Image (cartoon, rainbow, N blue to C red; front, side):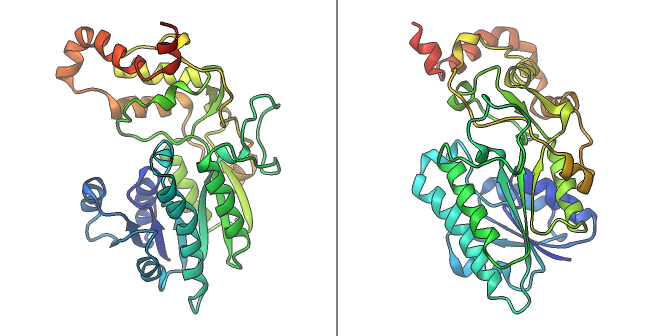
Length: 318
C-alpha cells in the first residue's frame, strides 16, 4: 500500500516506519529537515521516499499527500515544546491537520487517514474510577489537549475514512533530558505506558483490520498500568541518578490515567511488552556510557542538585 507517514522521524513515527517497511508497504516520509531527522533518514535511505517539508506550508503538504492510499498523521508539536511557541504549535497541530484533510479531499481517489491523538483529551480524571473509556467526555486542560480535541473533530467530519488512536505514554528509546514538567505530575498519579514497538505494531496491524470510524485507546494493558512514581523511580535509578525527594513534586491533577484497551487489543493484538520490559529497554537505551557510569558516584550529587533546581516545589521549601 502507498502510505504517507507524517512525523516519520519522530519517536512513534520512526518505529512505525520500520514496521511498515518490514511488511512491504511503499512509504513516503514527510518531516522537517534538521540534524536529528537527517540522521534517522540515513538509516532508511533507499528503502522509503523522503519528502522534506512543513505542515505549515500548504503546497508541500499537497505534494506529500498526492497519490497516497493511506495517510498516517503523526506530525505534531508535543509538550513541553507546545508552550514554547503557542502560535506555531497551533499552526502545526491544528492547521497542519486541516491542510492534510483538505489535500486528501482534493485527491481523485481519496486516501484513508489514521490520526494520532492522546489520552490527554480526557482531562483531569484522577478523581474518577478507572479506566478511561472512549465514551468518556473530553475536556481540554492545556493547549495540546485542545489542539487534539479540535483536530479529532475535523477528522471525524472530514468525509474521509478515518481511525483515531489515543495513545498512552510512549517513552522514547533515547535519552530524554530532565524538564520542569516532570515535577508537575503527582507521584501517585495513575500512569499507563505502551512500548513504542507495540504502538508501531498496532498501527501496522490496523491497516488490515476493520477499524474505520473507530476511536481506539492504545496502551500497554494492565501490566503497564502503574503509578507515576513507579516509572520515575525506574527511570532515575536506571540512569544512576536515583529517585528524587517526594517534596519536589506537585499535587495538582495531571491529565493521564489508565485506559480500557479491550477493544483495541481484540482488534490489533499488539500488547507484547510489560512495564518491566518497557523500562528494561528504556534504561538500556538511555544508560550513560561506561566512563560516566564509573564516575557516577562522584557526579550524582551535582546532577541531582541541578535537576532539583527545575522543581518550583523544591525551591519553594527553602
